[in-house]
Image (cartoon, rainbow, N blue to C red; front, side, top):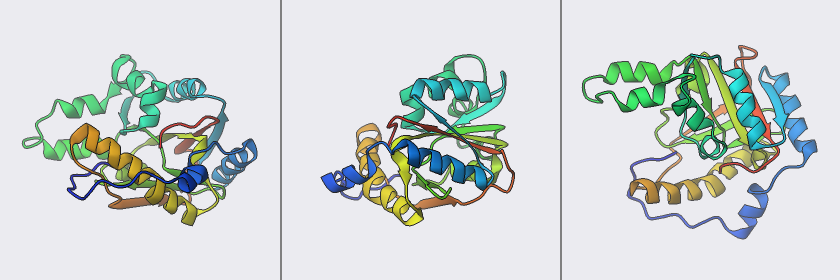
Length: 220
């Protein structure tokens, strides 16, 4: 969600917002969301921990596959980002892009980022009736999730379950954005913004998207 913006830092979420959006959903809500995702063409599984989610991602990624891992605190926290970029089991596109010349190889870089064989990331909210919500400043990762990536794997912490799309949007603006704004200012010296929003209500290619719901709070 990071963006080059010079706006004033955002206030941290207040206690009411934290209470609504930072706490682990009940198993009933997690399984309701998983069933709803399955009904709209999204493969969904519920796992007990970040460690189990990491193993589930490994099972889903073929050895030697081309993988783009979106910037994600969730993937970093459970070791998936490290697995993709450093294990030697895959072709990590993020590292390849870092090594390319932005001025001379822009066209190739856009194609690599937009249409990898596998995309691994997270979402900012999952509704109990089966929608996935993503907020982004640049929008660079959204195209591959919508259609460009051959397969999409999303690891989602159990605190991100919300009742509906309207609540999911509030979660992005009221909870995720202030936290990401703070992170971006510390990491890059600039703030963040919700300049692009993606809502996936159905996958027209059943099984293309897999969501791993984790019974632990992970990420924002």
